[in-house]
Amino acid sequence: MIIKYIKNFLAITTLLFTFSVSAQIEVKNKIVDFTMQSPIESASIYVQNTTIGTVSNSDGKFTLLVPEEFAKDTLIISSIGYKSYKIPVDEFDNSFDVFLDEDVASLDEVVITAEPRPKTGNDIVLKAMKKLAVNLPDSAYIQKGFLRHKERNKVEFKWLIESAITVYDSGFAANSSDYLKINVDQVRKSYDLRDVDSIFNYVAYNNQNAKRSRLKVKDVRRRDISTAQLEKAIKWNDTRVNGLQNIFQGKLNLLRNSGDAKALFGEDVLEKHHFDLDTILVDNDRKIYKIKISESIKFVDLDTKGIFNAGYNAKGWLYIYYDNYAIKKIEYELVAASPAQKVRSKRLFDTQVNHKLVMTYMEYQDKMYPNYIYYETPKLVNVGFKTDQKVSDEEKQRYNEEERYYYTVQEILFSEIILDKEVIKMKLDGEWDMDIFSPKPYDKAFWKNYNVLLESEEDEKLIQDLSQRASLFKD
Image 1 (cartoon, rainbow, N blue to C red):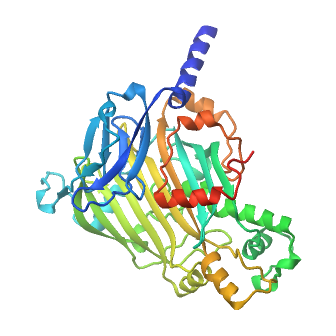
Image 2 (cartoon, rainbow, N blue to C red):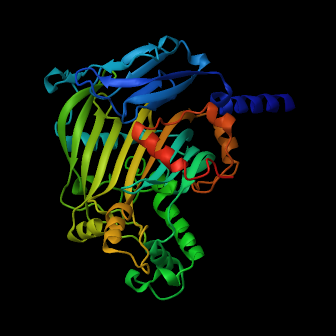
Image 3 (cartoon, helix red, strand yellow):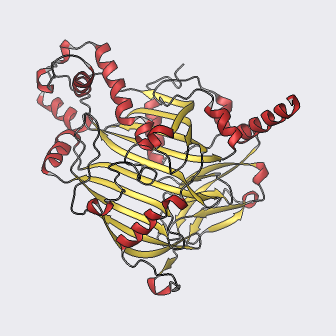
């Protein structure tokens, strides 16, 4: 009995740490549109029949660490609308760019089958939504991935966090708010150079948490608030607005949470969205619908507690496989549309696009798992200009236009899926902490063998500038 237990424990340990301790093959390059000679962003680079993969950045560049045991397996580079590039991992040449040719399937080329097929964009999306229970995971799984959280204004980066995360999901049928868990495993970088002077955060924190009369921003003076009070309010707002639970358990996890009350892609999806079939493309030799998302008869509301987060029109694109109606990719924006939201967005954020989301899915063992998430949103701050500070009109103008308006970007790349029940149970028995903002010791050996998202050239320069004014890693 003891011997069996030890063997099971060793097997579980091996599964958990395979990707961090085994020898790695580095695959890196740039992906280019053959006709336009321009970089291809968000292309998928992965090892066939595994979950080892990454995506290309805005420069078309990528880097991927592949365990040597997969050296003879096929590396696939694909992007919707292009012919895929396939080659054994150990034959890939890092010294040459990868050029992809366009590959488009017209509607006339689609083979007619005996099964009646939806003809309109609305009908195709409704069919895909009915198929979610079949196409999304129906049993518990764990995913390991990389998170990059960055915040900047119009001048510079102010905040950067990079972490390794683990996500547990019990499956599509269960409510994510009850059964989905997130843990921050490691922190790679943590630079925080934000100024501590957000009156907005303090007022919001006070009105929701303090047992006193409600405050208004115009009635609060900076000199009456201690730095400790501001820091507490800002940390509270960080978690409320940018916590990981908002991505995974909130309304913008459009497919996973479509069964929740007031879901954006729920039963009344056509009241808030209109879908038009644009064309049929090809993705890795499979036909895929490209469907345009636009506004419908009702505004989209996010019902965020304590925040006016309503009055939007949706726009974007859906990519749905022709053969099984599985959703491969979502590009989704919420644009201020109601008079109240338009005024608020312009005054507080200097933009009408309040939420921008990209989600791609990978197919593994006939189920679609999250692969890459990009989420961008403006942030309510008042950094750079203190209400009691005497400054010139020129300085006020600079603060208002360049330093006041912030936005946050969160990117998540998943590179491992664990389905083994024993491994999942052992992980669930441990402690879980989803706080991405608390610093952790830096583990150089861990990050040496962990797949991360490659920064764009612009991001790399901005991050270098940021790091010059902060310690590299926080204890």
